[in-house]
Amino acid sequence: MLSRLRGVESTRAQSSELFSQVEADAVRLRAAAQSEADEVRAAARRDADEARSKAQAEALEMAARAAAEAEQAKQRADRVGADLREQRADLERREQRLTEREQRVLADSQALEQRVQEVEAQVAALDERTAALDELEAERRAILERTAELSAAQAKAELVAAVEEQAKREAAIRVRDIEQEANENGQARAREIITLAIQRLASEQTAESVVSVLHLPGDEMKGRIIGREGRNIRAFEQVTGVNLIIDDTPEAVLLSCFDPVRREVARLTLEELVLDGRIHPHRIEEQYEKSKAEVEALCVRAGEDALVEVGITDMHPDLIALLGRLRYRTSYGQNVLKHLIESAHLAGMMAGELGLDIKLTKRCALLHDIGKALTHEVDGSHALIGAEIARRYGENEDVVHAIEAHHNEVELRTVEAVLTQAADAISGGRPGARRESLEAYVKRLERLEEISMSHDGVEKVFAMQAGREIRVMVLPDVVDDIQAQVLARDIAKQVEEELTYPGQIRITVVRESRSTEFAR
Image 1 (spheres, rainbow, N blue to C red):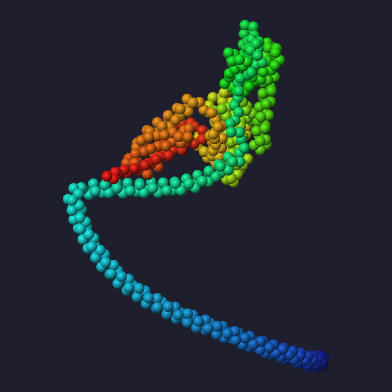
Image 2 (image 1 turned 180 degrees about the horizontal axis):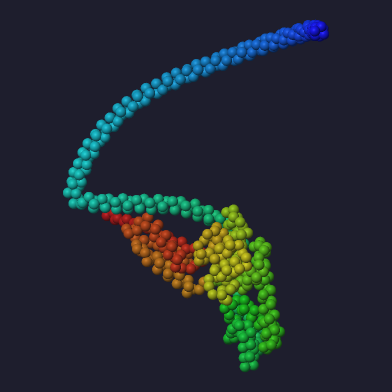
C-alpha cells in the first residue's frame, strides 16, 4: 500500500513538473503569439496606410479625370448646342424660302390659269374667224369659177404650172449668172496660166515630119537596086518588110510601110547600099542588121535626150527605148516625140503655177502617148496600150491614170491627168503644129454645121477661123436669152461627143432683134 502511495506521490510529482513545463511552454507560446500578433498588427497597419494613400491618390486621379471629362462633355454640349442653333436657323431660312416659293408658284398658277382662259377665248375667236373665212373663201371660189369658167383643180394646175415656169426661169437666170461669174474667173485664171506656159515654151512652130523619100545619085542606080530579074528589090522587101516603089520620079525612090521604125531601118539600109555601090541579097541582109542596130541605138539615145531635156532621171530602160521609137512617128504631121517633150514642158509650167508636183506632172505628159510606139503591133487604143505598158514597167498609178484618161476613155480623177490633157491639146492645137487632110477638114466643118442646124430655133450657122469657132444665128421670137445659153451648151456637148479635133471649138449663139419704122 505504501508502495502504491509512493507511486502515486511520484506520479503526482511528475504531473506537477509536467504541468509546470506545460505552463512555461504556454507562457512562451503566448509571448511568441503576442509578438507575432504585434508584428501582424503593425504590417496590417502599414498595409492599411499604403492602401489608404493609394486609394486617396486614385480618388484624386479619378476626380481629375472626372473633372476633365466633365469639361469635355460641357464643350461638346456647347458645340452641339451651337450646331443645333445653326441647324435651327437654317431650317427657319429654308422654311421661309419654301414659303416664298409656294407663294410664287401660287401666283404663277393663278396667272397661268388666267392665260389659259385668255388663250381659250382667243382660240374660240379664231375658230369663229376661220369659219367665217372658209365661208368667204367658198364664196370667192364660186365667184371665180363662175367668172373664169374653171374648176378649182384646173385653176390650181394652171397656177402651179405658172409658178413652176417662173421658178425654172429664175433658176436658169441664177445658174447663168453663177456660171458666167465662174467662167469669167476660171477662164481668166486658166488663160493666165496657159498664156504664161506658152510664152515660156521655146519650141519650133512646125515640127519635123518623117520623110520616106531617098534621093539617088543618078537614075542608073534604079536598075542596080532592082537587080537582075528583080532579085535585089525582092530580097530588100523580104528582109526589111518595106515596100520599095520605083517610079518615074527622077533620082528618087519611095519607101512605104505602116511602121515608121521599120521604114527608117529600110531607108538607112538602102542609103548605105547606094553609097557602097554593092547591091546583092547577101549584102542587103548584112547592111539591114547593121542599120537595125543603129536605129535601136538611135532610139535609146533619143529617149535619153528627151529625158534630159525634160529633167527626168529615172525610167525603165525598155520604156526609154519605146519613147525613143516615137522619134520616127508622126501624128497629123507633128513629130510625136517632140510633141511629148513640148507637152511635158507645158504641163510642168502649169503645175508650177498651180503649186503641184512638177516632176510628176512632167512624167505624166511625157509618157501620155507612149502607146503609139506599139499601136502597129498591138490592137486597141494607144491610151489604154500606153497605160498597160507604163503599169508593166512600174510607173506610178497617177502616171498610169493620166495616160489612160488623156482622151477621156477613162474618167479624169487627178489634177495631173487634167493638166496632161490640157498640155496635149495646147501642143497639138497651136497653129502650125499639125497638118490635116482637106477631106477630113471639110467633113468636120460640114458636121459642125449639121449639128448646129439640127436644133430648134436656129436660122443660120457660120464656121469661122478654120473651124475653131461656130456662129449660130437664132430666131429672136423663138429663142430667148436663157434658151440661147442652154442651146450653146447643148451644141458644145454634142460636138464633144461626136467629133475628134485638136484644141477647142468656141460655140457662139447670136440672138438679135431689129425694129424698123419709116418716117413719111
